[in-house]
Length: 212
Image (cartoon, rainbow, N blue to C red):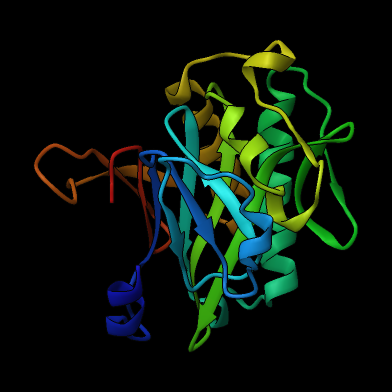
């Protein structure tokens, strides 16, 4: 992400990478180690995104929108709003009512967080992004104060009556993100031989799960 962002120019196509991480706690630039309560064998990795500590693991969609905000004509606040709305509209496909919360970026179902946001903007371009819980082991969240909030509950799609298939959620999420940013996906060449890629016709590229 860093290398892509540093190397891109005014004509570089936007990309969206979707993937799953091995179990890891990531600590944002504002993160405090006091919010990492008992990591055990799970590594804690400082990263250059905004926000505090969160957990990534199998069964969670991690989406990295690599977007040129200047070309899109939007600011960071609108970027966050549109990503949140894409998640809210994705969850609606499974009749899960979700909402954003003022002053606490992310998406919530009742009082539980289902998607966390941690972004970075460099030279008007974004990297890092979204962690969306679908069908994962939520136990590691009890080892931290998620996003810096002690006792914050977390939830996931499967526990709310939705699907356990990440590919199903990814398909809807890609469509909703494309709708939010005015993109229309089409098949494109893979980033690597074993990675499928979808390219929006309006100048971006969407890479489904597996792209690193």
